[in-house]
Amino acid sequence: MMHNFLEGVNHRFDSVFWPAWFLTRLQIRAIGTGESRKGRITVSTAEAESENPARPERGAGADIHFGLLDQRLGYILRRAQVAIFADFIAGCSHYDIRPVQYSILTIIENNPGLFQTQVAEALGIKKTNFVAMIVALEKRGLVSRVPLPHDRRSYGLYLTETGGALMPELHALAQAHEDRIVEKVGAEMHAALFKPMKQISTL
View (cartoon, rainbow, N blue to C red):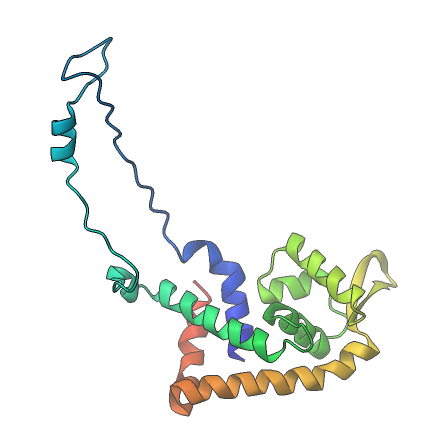
């Protein structure tokens, strides 16, 4: 489903959606009227004002120009992800389930007994972050970590009885969320989005 795919995009590419633009400002300190003291450059107030003309004010309600951002797919994907996640979270607010938690529970539901590292890698989640997520789900009684017979240091992940009973409800809410996306973009466009999005995820 779309939110599952975007969940992976979030963790793999979150740090590259916004370019690191570092702006440097030249600060001029006026010391007198143009004299140089101990190697410091001094600029008169008039000269400073001529080099830094008054900037036009853009008050509340002014149009925002996004420039080339509207041509950057990463930026558009990020905005779409924010909207999709917000809708999903609102739809699952009764159960306090977020997209990443739903993704984890769905993988475990369909692959009981996987190692923690296997689930983390499948979803593109850093191991250190994933452990905390599993602990939180375990405390809520939705997931259990079972030591493996052949290696007591490793754990297989399983849904608890409570977690298993919750999944049909979550799937129904997730489908309602997906239906809202279809309503927004149309069934044909929705179906066409999956292939290119999956291809982009392999960058």
